[in-house]
Structures are given as structure tokens and as C-alpha cells.
Length: 308
Ligand SMILES: *[C@@H]1O[C@H](CO)[C@@H](O)[C@H](O)[C@H]1NC(C)=O
Image (cartoon, rainbow, N blue to C red; front, top):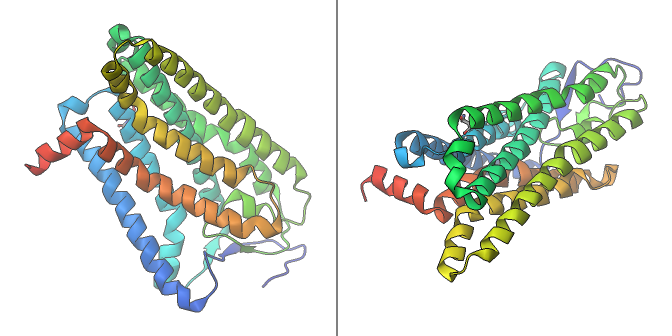
């Protein structure tokens, strides 16, 4: 079922990471392991933050937001590989493919926005420490978090409406391991140039560049403030409180820019799949690791709960 000239598509075939039969079981086991580790790591962060009163600060509540996002987005992106491994069925219904695109798109935006909110939190903590509890109060930081989620859910609607309008597909085989926008918009026989322009404009300029610039700006202020601290120990301590966040920011933006801003060509889809794997899999699993390995407060909370 490869050429569907002028016909409606009711389901898509998800090609997966690889076609090679011998690789199916190793890929399945690896993805299952990664998925369980991601759930485990992020659940640990969630439980620790709720149980330990020392972690009841906006920074850690935002981190919980990030963990929930990470668990949701890996569930959306990896469940098909795991199900295919169990049932051998590569087909996914049209509706569930559209739902995947919608949620992956909005989770990525949410993640960037929550990280931007966290950089604002770090900016206030370092540049305006005396007023930190006043500025980052519960109500305002909760509102900020809600705004991030809502914006993420709304932002995807325009290009999902365009994608939903395509009625004719050349093929229903998605060369990816989930329904991602980049491979799916290669499939319609209609002209997709409006969609591609909208996607690049929204994705690149509105939703990647603006959070990036805001984060960048926060870090410029943070660095200037840190440079003004006279003692070396003081500078080190101030930098330490934002190093986990900065690591995740660099990791996420680098993989996202490589994945979505490289020109979309048929022959770059394999490369795009690898980047997506890195982005969708490495980032969610590294978030809790970076925060627990690099962060004294989280390490202490973990030790206390495990009675070391
Ligand atoms: C998300 O972050 C906000 C801001 O700190 C916080 O108020 C809210 O409780 C967090 N949400 C969850 C589910 O932890």
C-alpha cells in the first residue's frame, strides 16, 4: 500500500528506527529500558520534591513541571516502538497520528517555555536575591507555569489545522518511529509549502528563537552579576546554583536546532530520526540525572530518603 493517489488515508504505517529484522528485538529492549529509566528517574525527582520541604522552592516546582513533560513526551514518542515490539503491528490510526503530532509539538514548546521560566527564576535568585521570595511567590510562579502549558497547547493548533486539511496522500508510510511533523508533511500530494513556511516561522522564530533570546538575556545578567562578586568562592557558589539548568538548556537547544532547522529533504530523514531519538530520548533521561548528580540539595534529599 505505497501509492495512494487521490485517496483518503485512514491509517499510517510507522516505519520505526530500522527495517532490519535482526535489529527489532535489540531495539525493542533498548527502547523499553530507556523508557523505564526515564519514568524511574523523573518519578524520583517528583517524589523527592514533594517529600522534602527543602526542595519546596519555585526552581524545584518548575523542575517537577519539566519531569511531568518529559514523562509525557517519551510516552507519546516511544509507545509505538514498544507496542510494535510486542504485537508486530506497525499501523497507527489517522487520529492517533494527528494526536501524536499535536502533543509532541506542544510538549516541545512547553519544555522550552518552562526552561525559560526557570532561567527567569535563576535570574531573580542571583541578580535580586533579597526580593526572590517576593517576586517568585507561589501565585505568580504558578501562573507562569500555567501560561507555559496553555501557550504550548494553543501554539500547535494553526499548523495542525493545515495538516488536518490534507485529503490526499502519496503514501501512508511515515519514515520515523512516531508521527513527527517533519516526515508526515512529506506525504500529502497537495502543496505543503504554506505549511512548511508556517511551521518554520512558528517553530523557529516564535517558539525557539524568542525563548532562546530570553534565556540568553537572563544568563547575560546572571554572568555580569557573578563577575561582580569579589570572592572566588562566592562566584563559584552563585554559578553552581544555575549550572544544572544551563546544562539542560544547552543540550536541548543544540539537539532541537539540529533536528528541526536543518533543511527538510527526503534523504536527510534518516539523520533526522537519529537526532529525534537523541532529542526525545536523551534529554528526558538526562534531566533528572543532571539535576541529581550536579545538585547538592537533590543529592541530600535522596540520601535522607534512602537513609544513608
Ligand atoms: C509547576 O510549577 C509551578 C511554579 O513553580 C508550581 O506552582 C506547580 O505546582 C508546578 N506543577 C506541578 C504539577 O508540580
